[in-house]
Length: 315
Length: 263
Ligand SMILES: Nc1ncnc2c1ncn2[C@@H]1O[C@H](COP(=O)(O)OP(=O)(O)O)[C@@H](O)[C@H]1O
Ligand SMILES: [Mg+2]
Image (tube, rainbow over all chains, first blue to last red; front, side, top):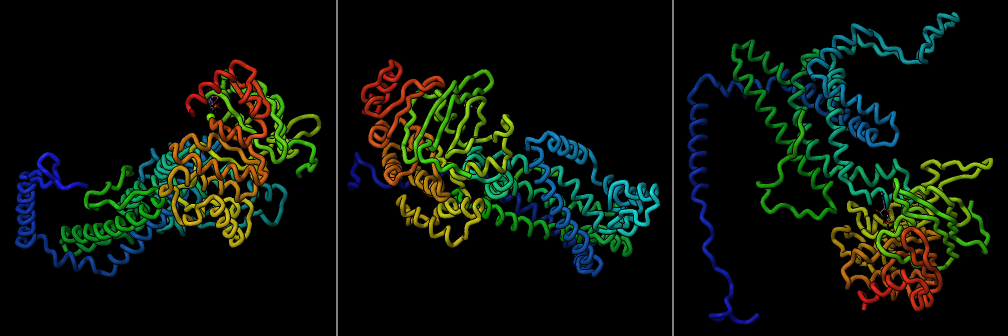
């Protein structure tokens, strides 16, 4: 480096671009927020103190944990697990597996979640009050030959299960798997073909290559839309009343408001809880994305406020 | 399992044919490679070199001919006068003894250099972790990357990645190494560090089939040079003959072009 002179310019000290419209926008937003806050405080009908009270009621908290959160966790575990399995089937060489996964996705994507939950909660218990697990046609054979044992190993009592969170998780999870299958398929296809070839060349079986090499890399593409799906699922647990499962956040909060003739604070209470859960989930998602992005040399975004959006998808 | 007849070649390919639809890529390739030999495959782009390498370790299925590696028929079992296709597990087992190095490295980007090398011996051969780790560290030293065990592939240069890829293949203690243009994707100044590792391997007695356009390497290291064009072997022999004194016009034209490029 040489010293700057008139014909060899040195360090740049320029006037930055001005953004006058940003300041106008900020001003407008500040005014709008101030108006909103003022209406919260002056309009008695909001009744925030009562909303905070509802948030802390025992049945509401129980609904939050045992309905909304447990329901989300359970149905997402089923949805992701089954979804990945269906995606792998869809991409396999075996035409039977491909066909099964296609029909599965077709059916559960067409099926509205509310209707599915009613069918599982009410319809299945009506059609099959009890499920016997054993040798196929064992009961018919036992009757024909007069055996004492009808070859049944396990009995599931659907009547007893019919209005529990388990049926709710099953319904939401089966439906979710159809969407997760598409997300997982896109993730698997995003991994370079050379990766499975390198794994094969090292003597890995197809299953091992999928589990150890392909899926961990596919996760990078799978996680962001799965975060979206999880957040959508939190809200879809309010459909659990269709089963009917009433230990659930929205229903419990609403019941409270109805009894006190203060519906609006009840809705505010539920909204605040949903906002809190979804905020926590967004933080978890950020950490998952960082973990599965390891080795891909994405430097941390300089300004996280303008980072990548959570991705597409949604039920 | 393996035939230990020392007189038989390690790789014995007879009349190998392979088509993609109506594109007849391999039209009857014969190739014998004795244990400890280095064979360099030359030929213009599209002549089927990559395809032939991939047929040897069953990344492609062949339409005709036979390939034996260490006395084992690749991809099939002969029983009652008929060939029976091996299942995926059996083919995976056959590939364990054959290392492959790709043009584009194909390291596992979510694993560190050391983890890349350790993956297959632990997952495929179920060898004890500590033993594999020690071997992996020694292999990293051997390829000159002892200070990079924790680096992810994305943090390494192309030449370093390719050296890790060679170490990864060696970790399985293969009988045979296949190299598909291992230096073609590299910046010129990084080519020599990879070739140096390969030269050492050759000196140590590894059996190697190398597709390459590096004439100096072929001349110095190869026991035999095979020139392929349009899916057939045009000319084969010691490097002094095929490179030094080619008999066929196509070989001559190809070498003239390559040597002009490499100066
Ligand atoms: N998977 C494939 N599907 C269809 N055609 C292929 C495939 N792989 C290779 N080919 C064709 O086979 C021919 C030989 O290719 P390749 O073996 O890669 O040649 P080389 O390595 O000598 O350049 C080319 O014409 C190529 O287009
Ligand atoms: Mg090639």
